Amino acid sequence: MNTDDWNALGLGHMAPRLDPEKSILSVLGIELEPVDDETIRAVVPVTDRIRQPMALVHGGVYGLIAETVASVATARLVYPDGLHAFGAGYSTNLLRPISVGSIHALGTLRHRGRTTLVWNVDMSDDEGRLCAVTLMTMAVRPDQAPRPEQGDPR
Image (cartoon, rainbow, N blue to C red; front, top):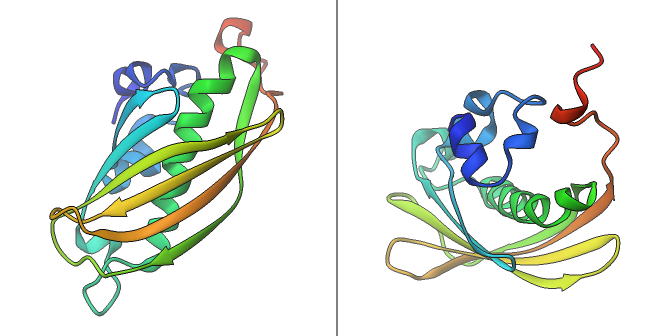
């Protein structure tokens, strides 16, 4: 993932804060596809980087995927209003293991309040079988970091 990819996602404003090529999206090969303001998809290839010693996808990876999906989707919604998104908490239930192929995530907005957004993230295998579900709460706060158009004070 590079700066052009971030711009295509509507996240170009984050590039000065983080090197996109070293982000968790790039490290794990997470590919995101916003569908609309309330829906986002992601695909993550299953590699040894995300498997635990029994060769299954590590349970914590599902939470990481859910928070990534919800963070990107929320940032796209709130950044134009001068707000920033932070993960506030999540609950993931693992339903069946994945050991090969890809993880397919579908994030759907369930609630949009003034200071929180709640996303449901369903994760399935290549056969479309539901493997994990996450309820992800995002906190929304004023963005205190300088924006690219304001210049970097460093």
